[in-house]
Image (cartoon, rainbow, N blue to C red; front, side, top):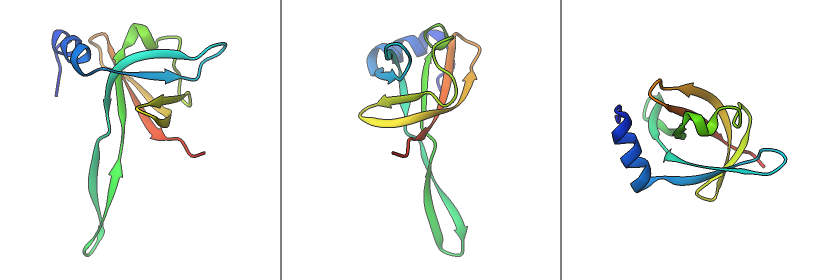
Length: 102
């Protein structure tokens, strides 16, 4: 896990993607680190499904007052809703996402 501010800044510069958030009156673009994490979850016996919990790590200053829960966003061509906002405490915030059902 990346836990130092300088590491996050360098990682953001090299691997950051732009997320577009459906804000009014105009959409807001924020650069961050997108993670489409997934994990196999056993349902019982030999049955396993893939569970995903995507996140978008952004600078807190960029998200504060702009992004809230249930805000729609598009990242890498996929649509999501912000499910939870978790400040990390180092100037960055993790936006936990869920796929948007259209």
